[in-house]
Amino acid sequence: MGKSIFVLGELNVDLIFSGENITPEWNREKLVDQFEQVLGSSSAITACVLAGLGHHVSFVGVVGDDPFGHFCMDQLEAKGVNTDYITVVPELKTGVTLSLTTTNDRALLTFMGAISKLTKEYLPVNLYEMADHIHFGSYYLQQDIRSQWREIFAEAKKHHISTSFDTGWDPNNQWYKDDLLELLEFTDLFIPSEEELFHILNIHNVTDIKAHLPEKRGMVAIKRGGNGSLLIDHNANYTSAEAYKVNPMDTTGAGDSFNAGLITGFLQNKRGKELLQFANACGALATLRIGGATTVPSLEEVLHFQNRFAQ
Image 1 (cartoon, helix red, strand yellow):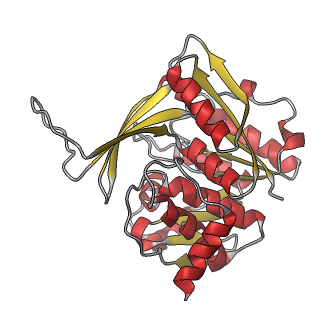
Image 2 (cartoon, rainbow, N blue to C red; image 1 turned 60 degrees about the horizontal axis):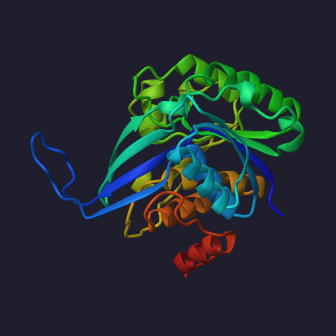
């Protein structure tokens, strides 16, 4: 059976407009190929994929008492994620992200709403007795809890609970390097994209990463899109794995699915290249569907996908 994983995160809907000519132009109306309303947020997509991979997943978050908020909870429940610890706040509006998506990339416009409102006061009182692993996404969007992550993860470590987080992009371009690096002392898996990490550390080359990381830290897994992924372990050893070659339909949620694969592999005691390859497979499968959590793979489907490419 899977582990008990608590995802502490932001919730929003994604409104996805997709096509090959989707760049807006002032005073012009353009037609797109497809539209979908789906569950968004890095944390929520990761939670859904983790549930699909066989874990017992509970989500802790905040939404407004509106159709988008109830849509988010319904979608999580449909994927097997426990929503008992989501707080509905009537005076808030649920966050919304507009995604302009091509087969190669995407641009995001986000209305924050309740996205930033999670704090440790919303966490279950017996969190550290229930969880085997704690994860959160969108370090920069979860503004109200940002200063509390160190305390939360330090407490998790005292209870022998493994931890992970993903940064996401900082829309304010502040990056909070010192605060973030301090958190790594209590983090088993730090999972940024390459571009995000370059901005955080103010560097321009992969070979410069090691010199800018603190000595006390867990593993750093770096998402590199079509270039695969890179892992820097506790001893500063580099391991890389190539991306699986697929024809993507939608890149939404690929990085979040990679997160779920990495957490799953880590909890299964996979390490090094084997760990990265499993995470890469989860990320690649995400690009073959519209929306990050519309459908999620089972553990058997991920293993079958890997075996197909190994032949």
